[in-house]
Amino acid sequence: MASVKIAYIGGGSTRAPGTLASFIRQAENFSGSEIVLQDIHPERLDLVRRLAVRMAEAQGADLKITATSDRRAALEGCDGVLSSYRPGGFEARALDERIPLSHGAIGQETQGAGGFFMALRAIAVAKGLVADMEAVCPDALLFNYTNPVNIVAQAISDHSPVRVVSLCEGPIVFPREIAELAGLDPRKVRAVMLGLNHACWSAGEDGGAQYDGQPMIPLLARKLEEGIEDEWARRWIGLAVELNSLPASYMRYYYFENEMVRELRGKSTTRAQDIQKDVPTYWQHYHEQVDAPNPILDPALSRGGIFELEVAVDVMDSVFNDKGEIWPTNVRNDGAVQDFSDAQVVEVPCLVNCQGVRPISGYRVPAPVRGLLGALGEYQQLTADAAWNGGRQQALQALVSNPLVRSLPLAQTLYDELAAAHREHLPERLW
Image (spheres, helix red, strand yellow):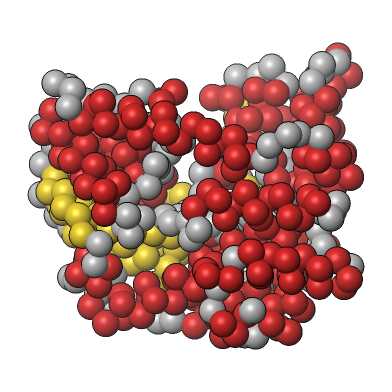
């Protein structure tokens, strides 16, 4: 099994204990490896380190877990780097959600104007991260889990020699969620999802999805005819049936935009504010477990559950142990999906082994969604370029190209208010 050094950038977050629990769960695949946690919050970083060490000791995991607030020191000699950070924290995410909604537009972590400003902040940090990697671990593979994962990967892929793969559990989770909404067994679903991150669709014959070996779309159509009580379940399943393809759940922001705006504006809190209320509970649980005789994370008291980033650990395992497995990831297209340029970062099944992460060719996205995905792809590229080295005008051009913005007056208003709100996390050229 591989003995490697992995740096975890953002290793003091509420999600970090669950990520480390995933490594410890697969410790035999990383026997003798070192995981270096790095974060800008020293107290939280130390707590996560102590908890991870205790969990590893209790389970007999042969892993060395250390921590430092010095990013370059953490990266020194690394074989892999896992990045999962949130510039500005949940407070910034709440602004991304609330400000657009105040103008009747979608505010969301990865979609619309909220996702746009998350990208600007994330890429501002990513520039420094890859510069450090180029200096001290140029051959390391960057496993990115920082949202919006596709835009972050696009910027790095276009502007840095660092090898990057962005990861998301969505292509695995979305088909299972649809099955559950329809009252089906999610374990019996098989679907090839592809397109862009949080904008992937099942592709192939019979809608690209099977249930227990049979085409799934006709089964969903029958479930609709029989009646589905939940309104959003009906809409999501109805979208799959009408377009003959399973959609990512985020597609509701585009195909039911007005309904989503009404629903979100009708709530007293945003998603980020809801999460913020639970954050003290997470830290309390981690404090309690670090002193427990046999520390075990409770999914109900851990941010994102115990194994939130297990896909990242699985992909690392396949790379460093040369397993040659197939995983959905976000990488340069390089001809894999006919509907995108070679340089576009796409979400697609990939062959993962010691040579890296390579997209599998021969796919097309479903015809009814090519227009929307094409527009989102153009927005992705414009945003990546503006975030990396553009100014306010270039960034505004990217924002107005977003299908959830479209109007120039709206784009100007949202840009001015969000740029002012996030000023401390943005380069001066974007003010």
